[in-house]
Length: 400
Image 1 (tube, one colour):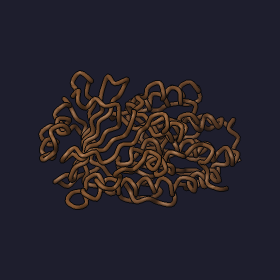
Image 2 (cartoon, one colour):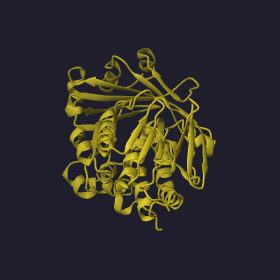
Image 3 (cartoon, helix red, strand yellow):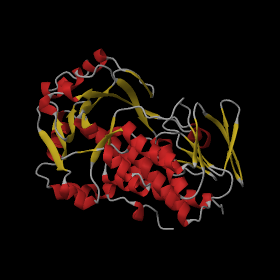
Image 4 (cartoon, one colour):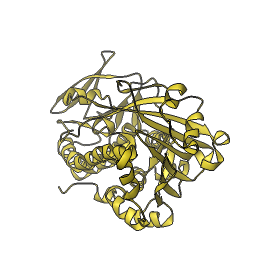
């Protein structure tokens, strides 16, 4: 059993949303933390992200709920339209009845603002040390702790290691060694100022236009002063997992046949970031002695459920709770954490794949999709979302 007052910190590989959430959860359990981040500075690239009530429950459990709430935009509904004919496939109100049902709102936020909320909590603790430009190369462990060797040949000693080092996790590579599953789906993301955004699409909603082998998403950010624009298509080319600058010509070539109202979205951004997406097959073991995985390192997923970052923050809360009930015994806590998270996060990965298929349906499958939610009441939508949005710190642990 470990006393948090011991000199050694807990090591966290990765300073993204998952890594910061993990660091905050550990500090709340009384540990000091050392975050090893390979980038030259702690920050978050990307554009907008969606926060379900489960994410706000997790922010609350980490003590930064108010910071996140103050930066979020609260949508009135989620809406899906067919991009070929503007048919409204489904519309889910996310106002007062939704909040009453799930105890927290649905919102959208800039990734940097979600990351910044966690960073504020981390910095206020005074118990977290950041090392940037530090890439994990190799991990050793013994009965008393973990030693991480970085690319500079330096050794970092800690009580345990949380591998929150993202979709290309070095920690996962050493312990699991599996291959990524490149989807062939390419995502273009951009942020557009309100002045440049079409008035007829300035909805206070998380909006999606679904088409054959493609879809488009838009929603307001930062008090409605900006709009997030995301477009996805099935690439003609063999793709490799990664991020690079996008090309206007490429993205425009994929959206023939889309109604002008939706297609105008792809003409707006002055610059795009291009993600070639991938996930991995879900695995049943993330924990290896005093090492465990968290967030995208544990369960990388495609974006169709809009839950990747939310799952990482949930992971962190669950990890903290597992340590609490096991009196900071890492091996027992990591086992409970893993048992509490594997099925839920695998469900996200597999549901996301299926949702991608539904979004991108064509032919008769498209007609089936458009019929799926016809005349469905808000309450029936809420019932279907209970498994996802009903998560909170009180129910996060598996029976132990």
